[in-house]
Image (cartoon, rainbow, N blue to C red; front, side):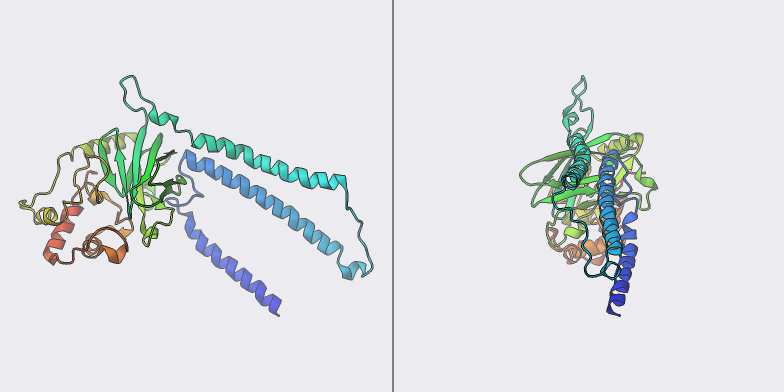
Amino acid sequence: MMKGLKKWRLVTLLAALTIILSGCGEEYLSTLIPAGEVGQDQFFLLILTTSIMVLVMAVVFTIYFIALAKFRRSKLGDNYMPKQVEGSHKLEFVWTAIPILLVIIMAVPTVYYTYKLGDVAAMEATDDEGNPENLVVNVTAKLYWWEFEYPEHGIVTAQELVVPTGERVYFNLISSDVKHSFWIPAVGGKLDNNVENVNKFYLTFDKESKDLEDGVFYGKCAELCGPSHALMDFKVKSLSPDEFDNWVAAMKETEGATASADSADAGEAAFAQSCIGCHAVSGVGTSGAAAPNLATYGDRNRVAGFLQHDKQNTIDWIKDPQKYKPGNLMPAFDSLSDEDLDAIADYLLDLKVEE
């Protein structure tokens, strides 16, 4: 009776896990649906090693069940003694050679892709005029948001990474406070953002994100960095090369943009009095800001990386950011009037560079 109950408990658990894990198959988030060269290479290694593991398990379980059925005591009796194979050179050779062969099968492609995916020499390549031949993005991780600088173009943004499709995009990864880890599950594996040194790697984006369910790929921090680690998300918009060039041009047009306390726009004036000291509204600049750049706030997919992108969540975030992301460095602005909060939210949602 107890054995039967345990069996059904196991079946129920496996069924529940199947339902839960089915949610990991979303195209914008899943490592099992790679959307770029790097993700596809890593997926190949995943399938290779998993297949070998399943093969080994299948062989072992098959031998086990054959032995269990063929040599059970009820069939052969208590006095049956199977053939002894102790000291068999043939068997010792087989169970030594097979694991070595399997390790070699896994090691050769693993070493190959390790060197391939770690080759960032082209990051420094320039044309005859000294211009970079490849797009480089400086990624700075902060508590609890992401800053993306495009040094070739002189622009900077936050929380949403915008990249072209069909080419390698190189990344310089660093942290301004504690260790973080940059990860876009559907596009490629993670790499740490350290405080002490810059890590470099590349990714490719084969698919435009506009066709995805949310119009973006999801990015994550994959290193426990504090109480809001699980909320340190960012989004990735992959555009066609022409659309990316248009986005860069639109970002450059925000040069010199700022908020004035004397503005006739109530939202701009309130923003200038309360927020401009930390937040920039121009997409032209360099990294190192104390708070996220808001030049593209109206184009974003989420508020603070995870809240639905709408006016009410914008207001709630400004009033009490600690409620939503404990440990972040933004102070609460609960002293602002409802009118000021409403006006600031309208002003922020109008900050757009995309058509």
